[in-house]
Image (cartoon, rainbow, N blue to C red):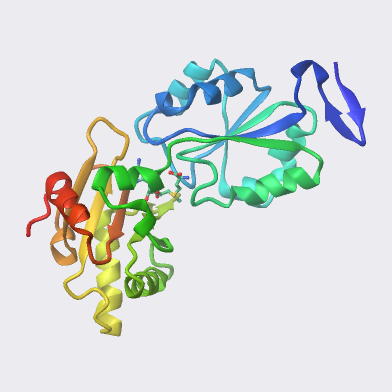
Length: 274
Ligand SMILES: C[S@@+](CC[C@H](N)C(=O)[O-])C[C@H]1O[C@@H](n2cnc3c(N)ncnc32)[C@H](O)[C@@H]1O
């Protein structure tokens, strides 16, 4: 039974007034969602998902829908960022809605905006967290999470203009003895940015600016974290550029000076040569 209190539609039989739940799906396939997340999806009236911030490369929409036992409505960036009142927010006024995202729903996304919009409309929200690439990178490489500074995204050049933000972020982090995590762009038309292309773009900025930020710099590439066959390789950037990492998703780190334990880990886990 539904009741309306202060224009907010509530369903006391559910025992909660939470109407919009953000669920992180983890890193690789449909089985990476938490049990709590799966339960919430199965109980939801409407299931939305977005795959423009990240993707589960080890599965398909059909496999996800089969596991959940219901259809999933996939939204593009414009739906979520410009017209959420036409979809997620409208439904969440009187239905139990879940919103699915790869990794953790609130890491390296702008979904806090959607959450705040919902709260302002009187819709209660909750988060069921998922494994995130941000922490997976630390596990895969042995780089210590408290030594990471600001992260950046290496984007596909726009009209041949290469963004210098990642270079400047590395420069600032290095000056503070901090590692830089570099997300690699996902673009509807251009596809998935690879580690190889990412390194090329960074080195093109170095070539232009000649500030020496990347001279002899080390890079660590991680592909398909969370899959049965992840690939983790560390080498000087100009060598890394030519290594084969296989299928996406890819991500990389430009580390600051290594702690001895990090160096040992990169030798053992990522083939770093001394
Ligand atoms: C914008 S971030 C979103 C992160 C996500 N919300 C999370 O918590 O994992 C997406 C980027 O992270 C990287 N990434 C995500 N999952 C990955 C995986 N399983 N293996 C390697 N890189 C991954 C890719 O560079 C991808 O473009």
